[in-house]
Image (cartoon, rainbow, N blue to C red; front, side, top):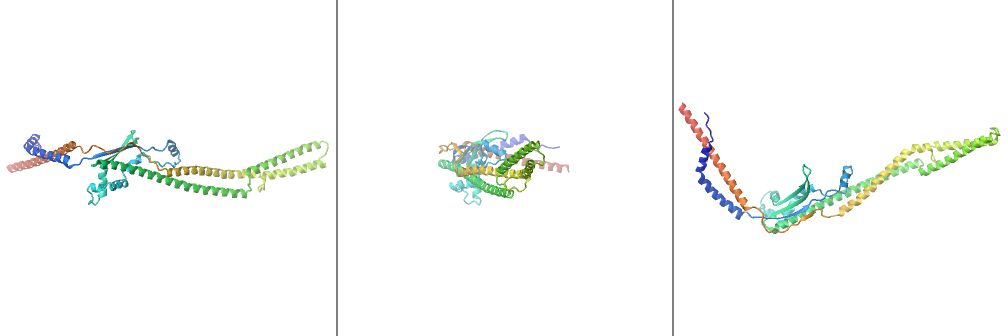
Length: 388
């Protein structure tokens, strides 16, 4: 037969028997909690300020980036980067050193004083983020910095100094980004200038090799000469037909005209098929050279446009590097607080009393369970002896 090791009625009887102990402990812990909350714990002031999130890159810059073109002059800090900058240990170290917080937190003799001071400072200096949006698409729209300290003036100085540090760090990062962009654009500009000079040099050698001094003018001269010669041949043929009505083919005039046409036709063939032009550019030669000429001119045009674009971006990058303006706009300015805000003494006292009494009740429960087990073991042993 199994026995129930935990009887609620017996437990409440056990609690009632220990009511004097609970009452004495309740009175003592209330007294200790009141002393701790009202006389030992120092109340703190809070000073705060709010500022708008920096504006992100313009829609045109975003479209350029989506289209595969990098906007090298976009050196703005994104709103999502404010929190990691604010949480950086470099910024926290400057605040700790400025306000001697290691001594205030009584961590001078601690082997890990800085790390412990940072943890304490994270509770005394808080960054709150006001976001807009939902479903994982929220965007920060404003930030609030709050600094707690037992001195009203120190809390004001802390929040003011932390904002100045955050603002100067962001401006330093923006200027550094602009400098890197400027250096990158300058290197690209120099590289593309060398590429353009190389293409022009190669194109110049190609034109000299093929005697392409002025392609358009040479083709125009060839076409003009070709037209004049062709017209002269047609005129001679008409005249030959006219003379043959009264003369034979062996007539000196007809033979002279035919000889002249033969010479003119050789000149036409020379214009059409010559491979080594002096001034006149052969038509077949021009057809062979045109693709390569077009390729050279297209590459030169592309490089010149790229150089123009890089030159414009270089000017913008120089302006961005020289610009050292704040991107954080204050909307709530800090002030020296007049009233202490934490800790709330009544809540702190109640929390201490509730926690202590809960632990005491759990301790009584453990004692009761232990005594019940002891009694159950004794009953089992007595039954075993009686059975024997």
